[in-house]
Image (cartoon, rainbow, N blue to C red; front, side, top):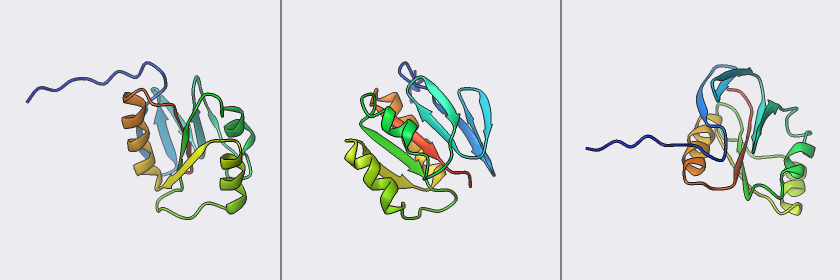
Length: 117
């Protein structure tokens, strides 16, 4: 079997995660975090849609990690993003991290909003 290392030219990959934290681009972040093109920052949760909407021209889909288990997104949160023309997919945070890395490795225009497990 031949293994090929994935390069992430257009974004910052998630390196790891654990209870209450994420490791992104070699840095450890506690609590909720956003991974947008060219930026990793703390996130205020579902009420904090402004930075996601501001990224509408740079991303096609935002993966939302809802914590340890997949839960429904608040309708107002989903609606705000969809009205801005952004696709939204929710899943448990661990799955969101893995899916984000795969899509990022494919060169897709993707962002990540994560709640800790």
